[in-house]
Image (cartoon, rainbow, N blue to C red; front, side, top):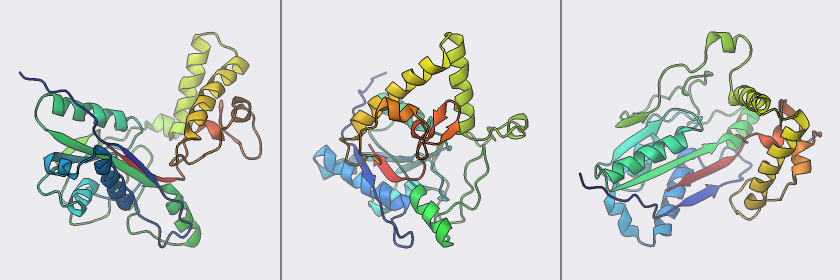
Amino acid sequence: MKQFEPVIVGVAQVSQREDDPSIAQSPIDLMIKAVSQAVLDTGSSKILQSIDSVRVVRGKWGYKNPAQEVAEQLDLARVQTGLTSLGGNYVQTLANQSFRDIQSGRLEAIVLTGAECGRTQARARLAGLTLDWDPVAVIPGQDPVSRTEKSREPDIFVGSHQNTRHEAEVSRGIRDPIQYYPLFEIALRSKIGESTSAHIKRISRLWADFSSIAKDNPDAWIRREISAREIATVTEFNRPVSLPYPKLMNSNNSVDQGAAL
């Protein structure tokens, strides 16, 4: 069977810092903006004519088929639509499947996108506002419950509809990544015989390296370089979250950001 080489031809990142949740852009708006900028990054709008599929990494919003909404806004008729389960691992999972679909010749060009507006959601809650794209419900271990809308079901679904939390975990307060990952981290540290202090120093240096790159990215949420010492030190602004992670070692959900390739 003939094999094709998957090539990333355009990428984009977007963000917003609108303080008023009543006028802030929605996740769909950020996805459309990101895809449009990724198209510009290819150097030719003709790429739109070759797109066979639009696929979205699920966020904490209530869209039933966001890929369909993105496709319609970009005048992409009759394209395949896709959606994943909620989870940080699904970014790479969806990319891998898309590369395989192109490599096999099943599809020619695929758009991957996703966006979160956690900052806007948090500000809306404080203001007592309900956003029309909020999920109906968020249950730990399950995908956010979609609101009722006219969108058809996605053509492909990557992930699982099963609850990923066991009742024994939930009863002990283990519900979210901030509880699971520390367990992995401590087990790995113990396995290699590393002391607690040496471990903190090592992972703080890792995060400091991330920070040194992020400071030059206009779409990074924190644009100042943060030292390993500052990352490791618990302060009023870097509170402990789950041992061994203080706040600066945790992913920040309270951002409005999106991306596409």
